[in-house]
Length: 196
Image (cartoon, rainbow, N blue to C red):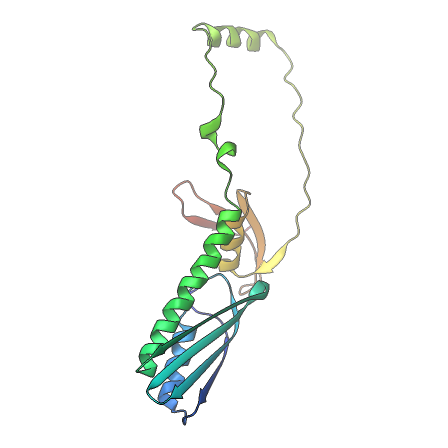
């Protein structure tokens, strides 16, 4: 999972008041602290407005795949308004990710739970073994060839692509190390990488 958004451009604007360095740094750190790997943040804008006793914090995230996420909060303290707005943004980002993952989940009728039940006679295995021994030449195996586009991406993006696909592995060029890697899901649920 991504631990920080790499080089996210954050613009902080304050209306009806002078901006302080501490307020700008606080808003920037909070936005850059969003640790979700989807959707990837490209640019962020924070608009902080002060009107009499009201402090309004509005944050707009421009993300990959043409996704725009925005939230605003009104409070008596600007720092509290920023915190609450960031928590709203994080919730909306998680919603986008779960919606995307739900689209790619197998439908219940495609899972193993819905296989037709078949009952065989007690001597079925014995008859099957006798048939296998009588055959001399095995059937030829057909191998299907697939074309595969080798993409250059980060390890985190490869994990996300593997989660979204139904393939057992993904082959990619690691953007940081410039090597070809194979990422697959182990039987215990963790991920493993093979470098040929």
